[in-house]
Length: 174
Image: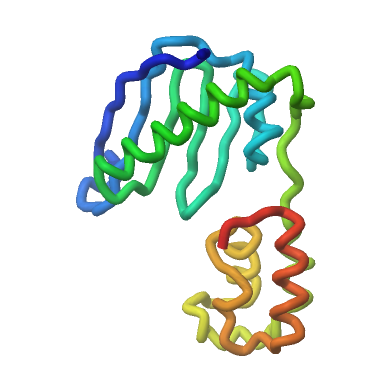
């Protein structure tokens, strides 16, 4: 077992203390730097950095960044969600470490969708029905995983399917 324990620090964002969501930093009692490229391969990291080493995941509307001695998680509802995510990640870290001989480590970020490819499929009317000022802004949010094909009311069924297929290759969680 690589990661045995951690100490969690849960707080509201300092930039806006009125936010309802919580952030968490888990201070790890063990250095897990060696597992990061394997974890990147297994969980499909959104961003991988060699120096200093870290891997970031975007899942369920949250950013989770794993560093050698810390895990940072944003946009949490409450402490029970904090505990659930940290325990899940601890399990993933330890399972990945145990199976590392079977895993090809990945030292680069996962490919990301291109905003221009998403924009090509949109109606380009800047109608604002999606809540965004332009189709370009909407496309950027889709590329980041914040919006999906179903969030554009004017998108044809054909283009909705094409967009879903395009995004599916990037394993975006929308």
